[in-house]
Amino acid sequence: MNIRYPVLLVIAATIASCKNNDNVFPRKVSSYLNLVNASADTLNIYLNGTRQNNTSSLAPGGQSFYITVPAGIQNYSFKKAGSPNVLFSVPLNLKDSVYNSIYVTDETASGSFTSVDAAFTDSAHAALRFANASPDAGDLDVAIGDSLKFFQAVAYKSLSGYLLVGNGQKRIRIYLAGATNPRLDTTITVVPNNGYTLFAKGSINSKNNTFKVGVASLKNDH
Image (cartoon, rainbow, N blue to C red; front, top):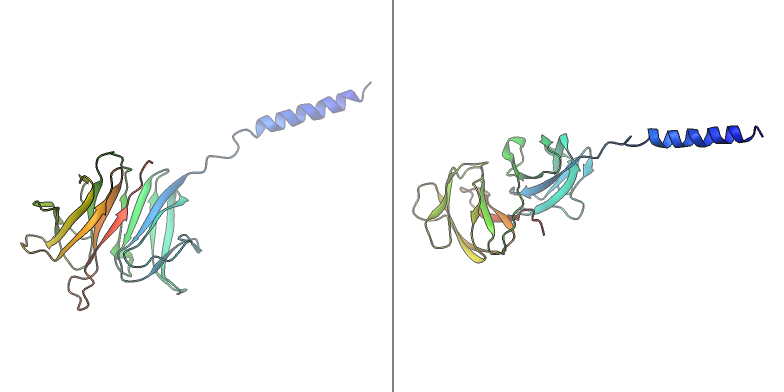
């Protein structure tokens, strides 16, 4: 008859233990980071010694798209592909569930800058913004299509606001601020429901013509 009491005590203790374990583990907070390689090197990004862009190294002009990383303050390191040596490291304080980009323009921490990237959806338009990632070009003006300059005097390591640009092929001209003749004249293709960052990269004064335009895709909701 007394055997049932220890059994009941064990069951009660088990139930109490399960209740006590409710919500023991806090929600994991994550952020999202897109590495945009505006430098002349092929790069990899590391966090706590672990490479984050696992699919492939990032060639000049490439992007990792959005890697899930821990929110909060973390120290990110950058290396050339195939090299064990750290080029530089930067601390980033990323907020929970926020999409971010880091633009690397050269081999130094001071040559990097970040942005917060809003998702964009519009069934009839694409959204375009401009980032100046050329270390020696100075302020830049940008014209979209055949009309007047839309983005004016965008400084190094700065981004413009967003512009709705419809869809399809768009002519892009980039000028030194105030100039009448473009230093770059090219076309890109955009589609609705997507956002893009157009970025100038490379050296305006280089002998081998490294001043170019890159395009990075932004996060979207579909």
